[in-house]
Structures are given as structure tokens and as C-alpha cells.
Image (cartoon, rainbow, N blue to C red; front, top):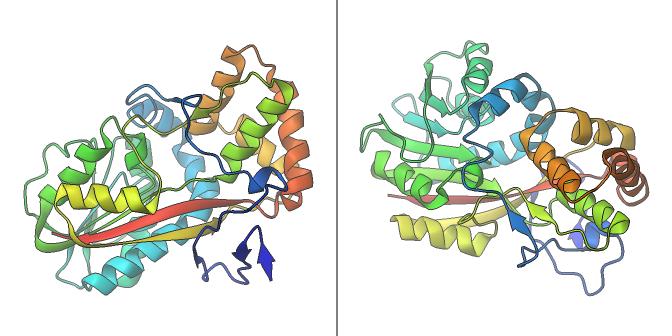
Length: 316
């Protein structure tokens, strides 16, 4: 079976795919969301660097987003382990660790591996600490520069869905390269294009206001496709770089479940979209009704939503 040009995935574990361009969009989910001059990017460091916002949202992050991103995290660790086995002697750095999806997957791969999980949000790090994982320590640190972390210290560096929200995406990748030992391996997962929630929000806004100018949550200087991800890692010094796209299920029980997440969950990213809509004179409740209608009609009443990730793996 095929859906929107992509082979149907019977199980979440079978999530590796390639996006195929459709000849003519049929529904909102078929319309590629491309960054154009009309799309506004966030002011530098406005989302991820606001530690208070992420700390406020920390307790619910894993409950909602984490259920989806764990598929990308699992695949990232699989690819890293394939390039350089994670063993009891490994020292792994998790950059922008959030609530711990990657750290958990590293420990699943090798329970004896040592992990340092870093994040700018103390609230996120507390979620990891509450897991009581052996040989896992936490440290508050900005992904940009990784200040306080020595050169050539780690056998592996991993990061999932964080670097595009930093003030300097390229510097973050270069910092990951810096702290690796020679021959060490990095696995970096980023958000891809054609994200369902973003497409739904912007389509609803456009229906209500044809003059609406979409917004991207990504920071200036970031990227979101395989080719650019590989190029950035190579520019940082990585060799033997490979990339892969993943489709991560993001299902809800119904359309109302999605709108509750998007409009009432206090995640910094949806909040930024909603604020941008209201700054252009839009009505929040009117947008909510339109979003719910789109999810109900075009996304199986919430069951067919997914997020897209791009994973890059390279060696120092």
C-alpha cells in the first residue's frame, strides 16, 4: 500500500523512507512546506535558549513529542552503533538531551556505557535524573560552543531534534566535532521538511487569511534536508558522512487531541506559531476550529499524523 507517495509502514520500527515529490497536491498533507522569502524565521536563539520555556514544558515533552521522536532517536543510535560499536568503555555525550530519548536508547544499546546528558533547560535534565539510569550524569550547557566540555573527550556524540533551535547551528556541529576523540562518531538528528503540524497550522491560517505570511520555527542558518545536513557535517570536519530520513508516527486519538496539544500544551514551538498568527490580527479560536477541521478531514481524525527527521552520522 502507498500513502502520499510513500510506501505504507505496517509497524513503527519500519520507519526508514525517502520523500517522493507528488505531481499535484491533493490535500494539505501533500503540499510541501518550503522555506521561501515569505516565511519568517525566528529571531536568533529565541526558542531553545529560553531555558525557562523548556523547563516549564519539560514534564509533558516526553509524554507527547517524546513518543514520536523516540523512533528517530532509536534509529540514530542504531546507525551510530553500526559505525562504531557502543561498549562498556564508551563515553557518550548527548547534546540538547531534552527528556532523554537518546540517552535511553544508548543505555538500551549498552547498559554499561557512560553518558553525559547536556541541555540548556534544568527542567529537562531533571526528567533524565528521575530515570535513575546508571552511569548517566547531567550538565546544564548551551549546545552552542559546549562551554566547559574539554576537547577530544568522548567516543560518541549524539543529538536529536535540538540543533536547529540554537543561535548558531553550525557552531553547534563544530563543537560536537571538537569534543570527540579522533575516530569518534557523531549521530545528529534534525527536523526535516513537510512537517504535518506545521503544514496544518499554516494551511489553516492561509484559509482564514490569504495574506497570512507563514513562520518557520527554525533559526537563521539552520537546515532541514539530507544534502545540507551532510554538507554541514563535512564542513565541520566529519568524514564518511551518511544521511537518512525517518518518518515518526505522531498519532492522536482524535482531532481534538491534536488541537489540545497545539493550542493548550505550552510547547514553545506551537506557542510561537500561535503568537505569530495573533500578531497578524488572527483570532486564536477561529484558527483552532480550522485546524481541527483539517486534521479530521485530511489526517484520519488525528491517526495519520507524522513528523519527519533527518539523521546524519559521521566520523572525526
